Picture (cartoon, rainbow, N blue to C red):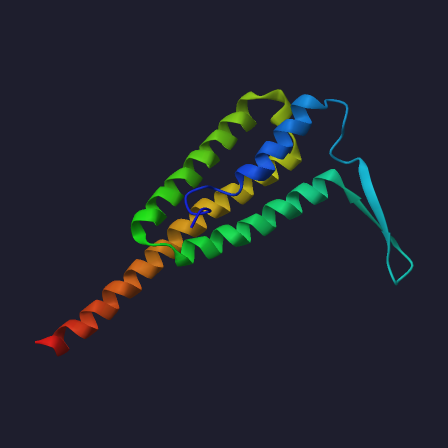
Length: 140
């Protein structure tokens, strides 16, 4: 599977960096669309809303990936997710364009990916050990 091992949260990070460094005049709270709701209210969608929504959707995919991959691939995937989180953290602390609430939320989503991936892997490993222990006495 091609997606295994590549942290998908690199996509919103790349989009953020492209917008922040290549188009410095664009603001994260600039309106990109307005949708009229049935209630009569207007829902204003900003660039920040769209980017955070993309990151949350990719986080869901990352969590699903953590439940399906083998232990050797899982370790590589978790290691790459951890390296991505560290890179995001360093950029947040050291780069002026990254000192925004949008980038902070991307960093927190990346942290949830790291913690969630390790928790799912640990839980799955415990369940596998419990199943193997239950099956082993019957084989003797």
